[in-house]
Image: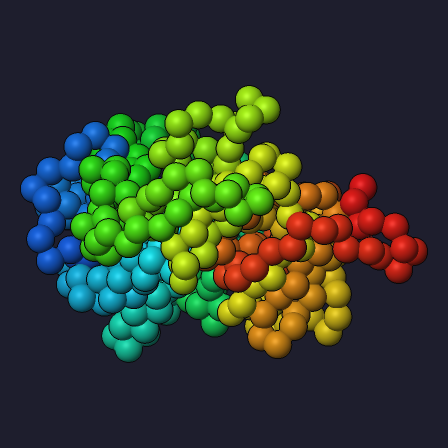
Length: 371
């Protein structure tokens, strides 16, 4: 096959490209320039897509003996990822930019161009597995990225390759060193790539500006003021701008955000518990929605936040009834459904969270749907 290897300049994508070469594919490396003004150097594990990263990707391609190109996707990245990120926070949501980048850039814009140029597949360094078109969790649970890949359609998955998903990260680094790849010990990037400072609130404040509002408790009593709902997310405990904990001494958490009135509601940890998750823009990895309710395991954050559930396709979206409550479920994040078999690693589908309910749903027997 002709394979386009997306090379970020990190160790995972370098080894993924190397494994594609070893498999006998005709491989071409490409680095995506996602910023119109890339920094000269990254700082430790902060940021990516810098000139340093492009140079690292080129050196890896040279070592592997494959052609290498840099493609400018900066305008598309700004529109589909950065602008979407800012707009979502302004609307009181908590988006996942990595998820949107996979959906709109790496497996839409990049894959479309690859197919137009005659490539059969796009290989990336994501930690996930594909088994006859079925998306599964990676072997390395700590590095698993199936959650942020669950937005991919069946067609997109048919053109994807994840060569490192069957190997734990320490072994990937050891393999890179054995191959002589200079990125073997390069730190992973763990921040939002377009906010290398790590200060998301300052980044959003510069984009959105001051939009004053009130912080209120569950009874509607005003506890304080804030400069914009973009500075908050459901489940947040610190940085609320309040003088202290609640009257009972327990910490307060953000439980709801109303972007229209600018109101941020806070409450107790119990106030965060939800039993039903509603989502829009459902994507089913099989290519079609199930005919009725299905048992599954729902995950609502990139790391953690899982519960057994019953999910149903409704009007192009999802209704997920949890069998155990979850906390910190924020609009704008994804709810990803996994098959509830002993392995529990097969992705069924996903949707973008649009709402929640805090009361347990009654099942057919009339008892709360909690175990």
